[in-house]
Length: 133
Image 1: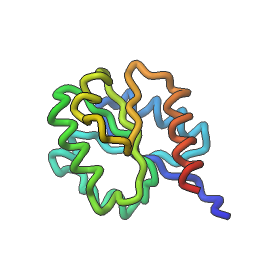
Image 2: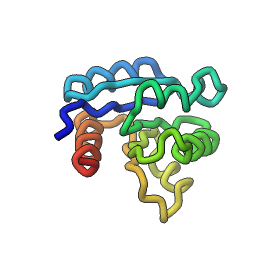
Image 3: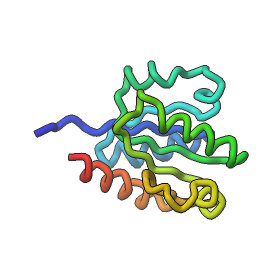
Image 4: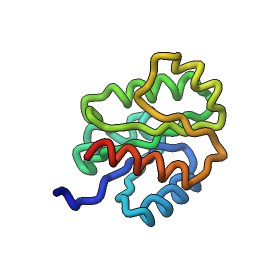
């Protein structure tokens, strides 16, 4: 039985949100690593190297304004070989808009609107971990 804690990557634009998610997820027993979405977009953080170093199993990705550009970045990140087999939880300030971008056939991630219940985010992560074991 694997007793190693799951590594959760948080990709967000807000340092405050990253910090809050880190605290609640670490309190729930997860290892949390993070990068800012603009660092990924601009190539300041190499996604492949980040994944080799940290080996995340779950990614919490925030889709902020501009929604369409951040949705495209999400699709690029989600389809990367470095994150093959990872599960995703998507957060956003406008869940209806992001759901419209995603379309009806996307079932690979959860959309959690903001302001979100931190307990809900932790529950989503725990649920994904249970499904992966």
